[in-house]
Amino acid sequence: MWELVKAGGWLMTPIVVCSILALVIIIERSHTLQFSKTVPSRLREQLITRLRENGDIGRTQLMNVKEKTALGDILATGLLYRQYGLESMTMHMQNRASVQVHQLEKNINMLGTIGAIAPLLGLLGTVLGIISSFLAITDGAMQDPTMLAAGVSQALITTAAGMIVAIPALVAYRYFQRRIIDINAQFETQAGLMIQELYDYQLLDNTHVAAPANSMTTIDERATDRLDVDKSNMATI
Image 1 (cartoon, rainbow, N blue to C red):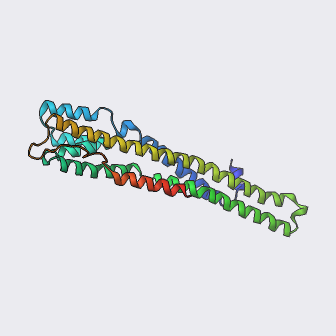
Image 2: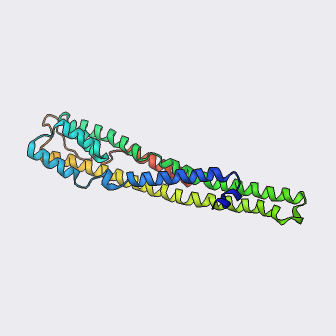
Image 3: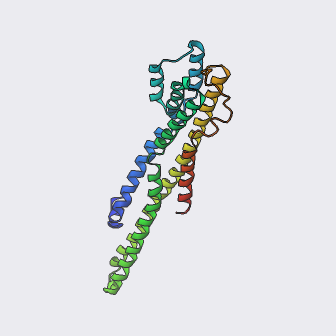
């Protein structure tokens, strides 16, 4: 393996660095973007049940819920502003959802960048290798095939290395984008269901209650638009 890296020339260094960065990001995001860590399945039901039984949830308990998961941050924020009415709840939950989606997108664009740059580095190595071969020919390398082989090997190795790095990076980039969209959809669904249940069980402040129809149809349109823009940009690469 080390012999291949050396044969690829100095351009193998940035390609190897890109591969290490991509691997680290893939491992870290795979761990972070698990549904169990972002959208716990029964969190909303537990909060509503506690509210119905006790009539309220202490601020300390809600702050503890906020710190554990992304969905907990959104739902607990809404409950903290429950006494200010439906509109205030919705606004603050939207803000927290936007923050959480931004956190989930951390380093995802780096994967897309690596997927775009790695093949270009490989192509540059190919061009330099071919140039090296032609220069060897002009210097009389026809009598020594090893001089030609060095340039040809550099051209082939860097191209292959660039593709080996780029393909997994782009696949992971698309996968994580899809996962974030799914998680954001769960944010919207869970927040909307919680508001509906608060309304149905009359757990909202009566002085601020209004029918929650369509109040949470899109909890974070800005985050979804940002993901669509990222996908459009990658489609043009």
